[in-house]
Length: 401
Image 1 (cartoon, helix red, strand yellow):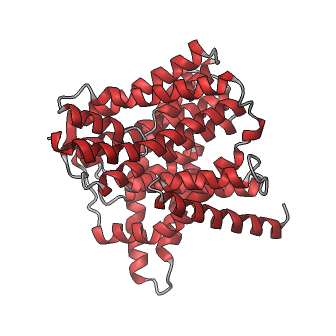
Image 2 (tube, rainbow, N blue to C red):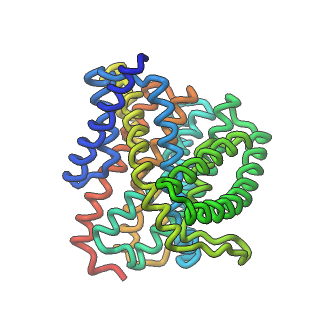
């Protein structure tokens, strides 16, 4: 791609993503749906103006890493500890049941190979904590008992999802499932989660010191982005996906982070908040490129929409995705209305599900039809729950504890 063509394509991507995101939010839908739709409109599925070129792909990968950094930055491990057993049950069932249902449908019903079926199940495990927090905040239920359970469970879902992503990434590189590869990844991920946050926290103290004496603006975002990219490289060097590095860096720099076994590096709350404020524009610049890129990578024209497969595949996985998240909520001791609210709040897949699906496509695991079916399921489970939750709370809020 010529340089001037790249500039024009990037301009169109950024502006179109913003316009579609604004329209989506005004229609009470998550912004990510608008950004995904922007890619579908610009790409081969509709207008065919922009192709998913390598330069755009690289910027999209930076967007994924920064997105996981933001997820880590917003992760509150203490919240999980406070909500305790109920969050644990909701999270483990909300992770394990969709994984089992998705795998079972892929392997035994549709006859896909083992690795493809694992990727399908893995994609269904995702929970978008960003969308969940936004909806609960809009409904002023964030501090309610069911809101605390949901947020605690979503934190654990994030951690389990990143570990599963690392495993599937290793399997995709090796071309198959291997217990040796799985053991290696789990050891590396465990070591990385123990050592990387400690190192990041120590490095952040150095960054803070330089930020206090620097007379040149912009030192904080420059050094934090450099730290995120370094940990992304380090994660890859240890055999884990780069995304893990972004998540670990965000987790360590979170103002809600604490180290295990009572060992704590007391964070300066104002410094942590400054990191969030100054990094937010950079994160919000790059992450829409990833979602648009997912839309650009879809070629809906090549799919035989008259084929029963795409409809049967999408609808069956949609049912598995919803049932899998509701299951955990119905196992805890809460009023029935609260159980439904918890299950619905755990349903949105959003950006996390799209990361799984895109990894499957890039790794050659998903065919065009399977990838399109997964994106349809992710889009529906992202788009519909916020509307259903608002209706549900409007009607049954008085029946919750």
